[in-house]
Image (cartoon, rainbow, N blue to C red; front, side, top):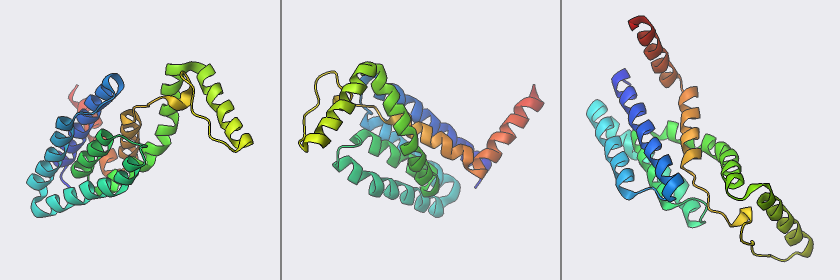
Length: 190
């Protein structure tokens, strides 16, 4: 893979994630236009630099994201915007980096979800949810979440997906070499 191609992919993916995080945190929505732009850029960049192989790689990343995340959307764990955004990231970065981004995104999601829920309902809301879960187990009956409880909150997942992508990029040898080269170029140029 060309360094120019990888740099463009990383810059574009990072930009799409920044916009998605802002919109997901403040509007709890990732617009279709942003997702379509990510998908288009993924196919365009990969097709330009690697021709048919690039289009195939973008298609595999796009399809893998759909195959893995659509069932999660059906179960209402993720929103449609999250799924479409990751389809764009898959088209842009390819299936391997997408897969690791999702794995690390799940880990990051556990932490970011707790932090975001804590910011919304505080410790008392978290304790109410734990108590309700205990009551559900003890009574073997489902009790609906109360208002102000952690379990009733919607949590934006774009921050977790972005952290997973950053984590995957940091561990990817090609991206790490690119970043080391950029750091060396900046240090030598200043």
